[in-house]
Amino acid sequence: MSYKNLKYYNSKSYLNFFNYLKTKSFSSSIEEVEKKQIYKLKQTISYVLKKSKFYKQKYKNSFSLKDIKQSDDINKIPLISKQEIIDSYPNFAFKKKNYLSMTTGGTSGNPLTILMNEDYKSKSLALTFFYMSCYGLNPIKDKGLRIHGDITKNSDNYEIKNNNLVLSGNHIDKDNIKKFVKIINEFKPVYIHAYPSSIYLFTKLLKEFSLKINCELRQIITDSENLYLYQKKMLEKFYKCKVQSIYGHTEGALFGMTLEGKRLIHIHPAVGILQLLDGQNKEIKETNKVGQIVVSGFLNKCFPLIRYKTNDFGSYYSLTKGNFSYRVLNKIDGRLQDFALNKKSNIIPLGPLLFDYNLNWKNIEKFKIIQNKIGFLEFHIILIDMKKKMKTTEYLKKDLRRVFKNNFYFSIKIKKKLKNTPRGKFKYLEQKIKINKYL
Image (cartoon, rainbow, N blue to C red):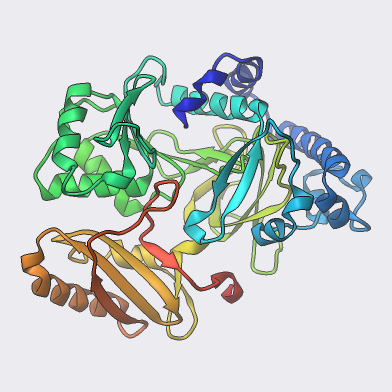
């Protein structure tokens, strides 16, 4: 949540949507849910046909609104992609002077500017307060620690606002870690809200320097990135509390959340329609089969996405038995930019190889992998102790050969600094190849 959006708290849009989420979330049958979704989908299509040149052209001679009667009929609607929107942006966007904007997609190297209005921001805030309430938290009353990409006004790279201590994720390093711990222990938050990459790096430094957070944390909430199992396990063990994950997009077309600290992601039907598609763009209607996540959103009238390919991948745990009477994902299996191409041009998820096989990351403060060429991986690393440079690079090379075998060529470069994305996320893989061509 962006806490500067609290000005929308208790607005009419906020109150209506928050009350709807609280009262309607657990009572509907799947038939009732899908009937409501199709109604909202048809409303959205009617709206974009009036407002968007892009959709008018896209839907010309492709289907009739009268043909959309039940949930399976959504497959009659053409798919759209991020690149398609970027290429046709002037015809896609609904321009108004009072619209707000936010850029997304810096991690994939292909940024997209999302437009939004106060109605959408109010509903987005209501959604945040809803999931926080499900975790027994209230951002107004409970003290929280926020570790995102915020640019703080304080030269010490932190500030306190709206009952939250905000740390700049861009300044989590060995030079600032002791100062940050002192500030946190004085503030005493009861929950942490952070990017998975930010809190993982933060916690890794705590362990390296034998530091502790002396607060009784009730929850850790992560968002905006995939929460990997190795991250979840380390955080739960270190902080001794449940670690939750929020799944959604700046685009506002889908929302899901974990419950009770488990990995299953419960999708809320009030935000949008979820589909999984296979490599031939056929809809998956079975459990445990991985497909690309495709979304159709209801909330953002300034930037409506209908059958939008997210480049995220997941599989169903259930299609009907979620906590919100809707779909449940086992987990997010990866975002497209989390994959690399080996020597044979096969797509490989790097996360499990890097973190599930006990690679020795001792003396490595941060690392980033850059792939510019098929089969080649550049490891850029920041060392905690430069005196151990030779030893560290030797055992890293040995570990990489053990885990990756002969699938990649490697190079290791020592760096003084590694950049975060413009929004403050830290991505361990910077994929320069247009990997979607190899799907």
